[in-house]
Image 1 (tube, rainbow, N blue to C red):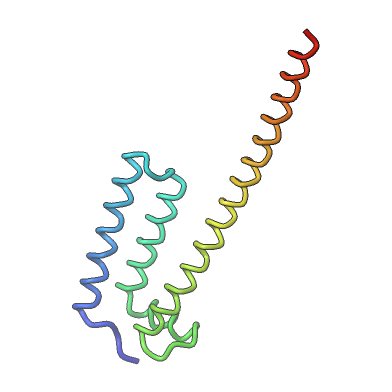
Image 2: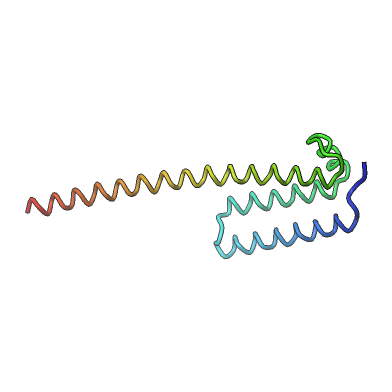
Length: 120
């Protein structure tokens, strides 16, 4: 099985390094939560490890049914993106539930306030 060229490994490593720097910048500027930032940093380190380790990449490529390492990387990236979509959907659903409960609570408080004003 062919392995990734040195140029591909270097390019991907540079992209991952830029990604880590950008995530750290976003965390410091409080644009993203630390939990999500750490998830991204962990993902970049894992991807770097897979790209730089030919044996791991070859094994994972065979495991996911790929023929060459670039196909294996694409399959793994697609799976990772789907996993992130699920994680963010769960977070979004939890936030929507909180918004719904807060809206109901505010409506209840407004009703009580109106009733108490009518009683006076």
